[in-house]
Image (cartoon, rainbow, N blue to C red; front, side, top):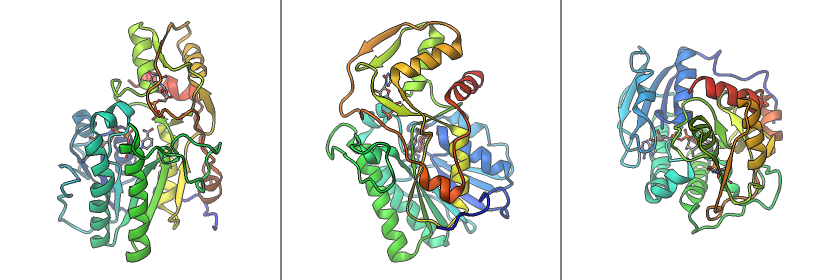
Length: 320
Ligand code: NAD
Ligand code: UDP
């Protein structure tokens, strides 16, 4: 692994980039970044968990085009050459993917294959948004990319976890057998502006509940941990990964680890007031802990998260 000098998409010639899931939280930030760098972006989304207002942000931009489509049925792009296909389409919050388990499995399976086929036809680079969920309820802590995970193959989270594990497998198969130029990123819990306040994830629930003056819901006893990454750090890591030739999965996440009760304390600090709590049952198969080992990203991309949780939460609240 040769460390590149500050790899980035910012300095490259204008590219034509197709992004599935462009109307979602992460997808819309990628659209913004790449349009800002002078690239052309084709967004694709069926709005199963995304928001039309995220498409509306870019519709007037001369280098943005939007295709409303279910990528499981096919990606209706037949136009000019493509440089990159970035597959971000998938319900991502536990309530969303548990509401749509079949759609989630299919977008991980058929949706990923349709993206790979499109990339193969165009000789384009393919980028898969995988997840820390491939580690399941981890028995190794923190989680390096070499850890194979501890996943319940048929539990309530399996539609997401196993869909993404299959997506990684088929991405590597297209790389190994057909030579598709692939990248795989394992994204750890990410937050920031443009998350749906009703998506049911912990940060959005806490923000929404705090702003409404309602008690914050703690599932279980609040001792489970997560490591929260601000969206700008993720986008920077993705941009750097696209600029290097590395085909194995790469963790991108912030290694600062918080229990859910720690997270409440940080929220109280940011809001400057005490927050009430309401305890609710822990959902099925909820991982007890999660924290990325980011050695690979540090060495390969010279990347590390820059935004501390207090700062990221403040920015999120300012830009709701
Ligand atoms: P999101 O729900 O906000 O965005 C996903 C987008 O994909 C939505 O706009 C949705 O409508 C679209 N989509 C889903 N199925 C589709 C289909 N069949 N055809 C077309 N569009 C479809 O979620 P997000 O947080 O932005 O996550 C984006 C990607 O990043 C997902 O693949 C997710 O698994 C991955 N990821 C996110 C996180 C995180 O913390 N946000 C963590 C790990 C992985
Ligand atoms: N969680 C919580 N209260 C909520 C929502 C979630 O305590 O209102 C917990 C949840 O049980 C999990 C953690 O917060 O342990 C992170 O949940 P999230 O859905 O954000 O992400 P994921 O479980 O996919 O990491």
